[in-house]
Length: 163
Image (cartoon, rainbow, N blue to C red):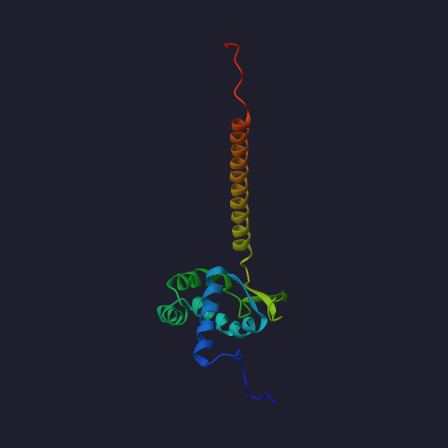
């Protein structure tokens, strides 16, 4: 029986598990959406919710507590930027979306994202699509120029009438 055995060990010792969860929480706050296994997503949920609650408080003490847990200063700054978005919400700041199975070991994968991050993710997708289109256009131009140069080399010089 699993009575009074809360949490997940994730097949790691204590320090490794703590470092893993800190890294996942930091990545989620910076990126607003990450892909991981379902078990890791469920294990990190309470940590992310606690960080957002600290961000909602917004005082110096909570900023120091968040800085002690999160791995980068950028993550702390971003946390205090996005936390007001959840002002009237009492928890439930995350969404876990199952996305299939991992190729190697068959572990179930999931996207975990902050609620309200749809706008930011759409902007990122649009920027990526524009960059991809720009690269494709540059590649197409380079290929056309290469073909024109190749055709210019293959054409024999015109035989003149001055012989």
